[in-house]
Amino acid sequence: MTLTFEVDPAVDPALRDGVLSLWADVSNAGGAVGFVPPVTPEEIRPALLKHLVAMSEGGTRLLVGRDEDGRVAATAFFTFNTHPLMTHWVWLYTVMVHPRHQGRGYGRDLMAAVEHTARTAGGFEAIEAIRLTCRGGTGVDGFYARSGYKEVGRVPDAIRVAPGDDRDDIIMLLPLA
Image (cartoon, rainbow, N blue to C red):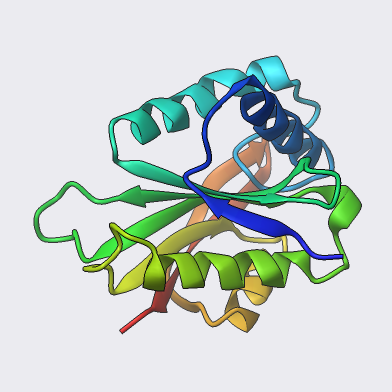
C-alpha cells in the first residue's frame, strides 16, 4: 500500500486530532520533531495551533499523507518567508511519518510529494528551494541527503535534548530550479 497525499486539506477535528496523535507517536518513538518523550497530544496542541493559525493566515501550507484506512500517517508543513529578500524559498517543518509505517518507503514517498508540491501546486510558482533543519545525532540528515537535500550549514550544540545532550542543528537545502 502507499500513502495518499493531499495539499491544504480541510482542517476539521479528525485532521487536527490525527496530526496531534501522529506528532505524539512520532515524538514518543524518538522522532526529532520538537519534543522529547514522553509527551502527550495536549502538550503538543499549542505547537499545532501555531501551525493552524499560520495556515489560516496564508503563511503556511500542509501536506498530509493518509494510510489505506484514511488515518493521518505523514505530514510536512511549508512556511513561506515574509522577508522580501527571501521569498524565493520555503521552510519545511514537522516532517513526520508514523512509526507503524516506518521501513516501508513512506518517508521517501513523503519527500517526493513535498518536492512535487513545491514544484507544481498553486502558490509555489516563485519558489526555487526548500530549506529545513534537522537534529544531529539522529541520522535523519542522511535520509534527507538521499532525498536530494544538501547540508548547507550546521550550528554545533544548538539543540539541547537534555542536560549534557546537545545536538547540532543541521541546515539542509533542496534547490528546485
